[in-house]
Amino acid sequence: MEIKITKTTTPKEKPVDESKLGFGQVMSDHMFLMNYTEGRGWHDARVTPYAPLPMDPSCMVLHYAQEVFEGMKAYRWADGSVHLFRPEENAKRLQDSSDRLCIPQIPVDDFVQAVKTLVAVDKDWVPHQEGTSLYVRPFCFATDNHLGVHASKTYLFCIIGSPSGSYYPNGIDPVNIYVESRDVRAVRGGTGFTKCGGNYAASLRAGEAAATAGYAQVLWLDGVERKYIEEVGAMNVMFKVDGKVITPALNGSILPGITRKSCLELVRSWGVPVEERKITAEELFVAADEGKLEEAWGTGTAAVISPIGEMGWEGKKAAINGGEIGQLSQKLYNTLTGIQWGKVEDVHHWVTNID
Ligand SMILES: *Cc1c(COP(=O)(O)O)cnc(C)c1O
Image 1: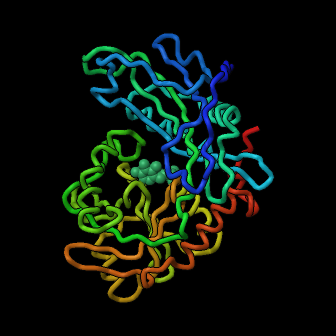
Image 2: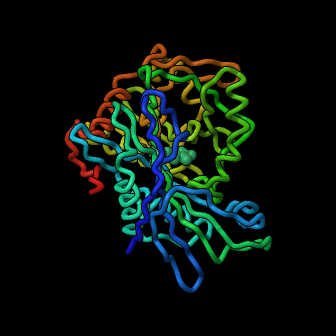
Image 3: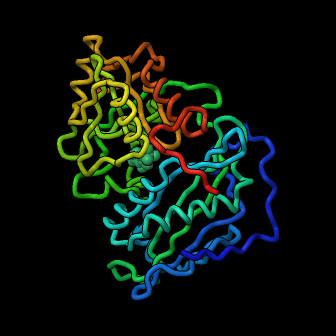
């Protein structure tokens, strides 16, 4: 794919204090754009100065939410080089999401090339301080201007980058979570396995209710029986029970996380038994009562590992590992972040240099 590069003539000031970056607040100098037109396919791949996207009020995405996205990071190593973590997995997942939302797919190689090109142009925007990264947000949406309900004939694929701070500036802190029995995030046959904006819109209310009740995250149950654990917040979830790692099987309503996949590959390579299956909230609270719920954690690109210190469900509370991060969670965190920042040997060939 040929990508035309137009560099900004008015570069922005880069954040001076990288400890204050936060998440997704500052955008880098450039963005990647590519258009789709029915009959012509994807065309006009380009990197341009970061700028607002002009939009007609009848633009289809504003009404029917035909949109998919990805989330990934570019990591600066101690030698100054910049790397991505399993970008072809993001490319494949965007294809699966696109397929579900009737959005034309982008070839895996073109996706990876687009991300690498943008990150290379904005390489100076990849922050330096430990734990920081350039968060990369590819997204693709319907751009036809009219109100008829059907798949759009035109689309825009866009990638933006945002220098972001360390997720754990004050060290890893286990969170308390609340089992949500009213709202559901997704149902089988719906869009739960895709990264589409609509899933997030539907999850906000429960998140706010949990926050009001003093919990950091929502533990989602299945949409049919409200019995089986699905995910935690916008992360996949895993438990260590009686020496085994258990995690909900990918059933269509659960997002197939790349961190999830990587954790399971690592855990299996360490000889720890893994079960991907249905898990009820009941089972976890019984295991906690019996002292067998050893660890619990969420997995996702942003936090990598987010240990769970306490769970609340129907008035009951279960403390996990005394509210501290467990050994296996810590080992997963150290290994994954070590590979991402080039400090641990990448035996699985997960990282790619952008140059
Ligand atoms: C993105 C996402 C995840 C985590 O996926 P990663 O590839 O590990 O970042 C988990 N659940 C939901 C709902 C997500 O949107």
